[in-house]
Image (cartoon, rainbow, N blue to C red):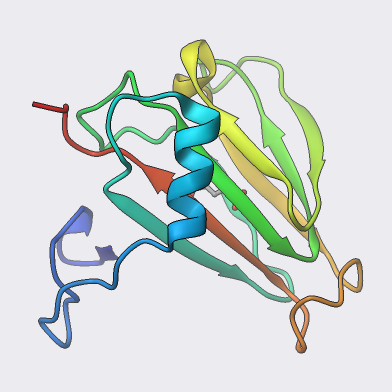
Length: 145
Ligand SMILES: O=C(O)CCC(=O)C(=O)O
């Protein structure tokens, strides 16, 4: 979760209800197993919803201890213009369209690559009744013991 006071962090429970987060859906866990080949399951499934002009600036996912684990994301709904560069913010970037059902894995050297979402392309999917895009991002946070 993230907030103004303490920034981005992983926590076991919902900050408002105090309840544990729901289980990660089986289908997402199965994809993780099949595609990452990582020795342990993901511990977080972040859900981002993009509507209208929503975007995500270039960043590196760096709040996890398990740097060797890939980050796997699943795109649902409208197509995103996804941008990926190198390990320096100033490295050249290129953009890739992520359509509904596409899965994007940042593993190996790309695990430390700057990436972000430039924009969503409205009307490119009928999956979500009100349009927009949902991205599920699976991450291993702790080093498997
Ligand atoms: O929405 C996406 O495809 C990217 C999400 C992302 O970069 C993140 O959650 O850190």
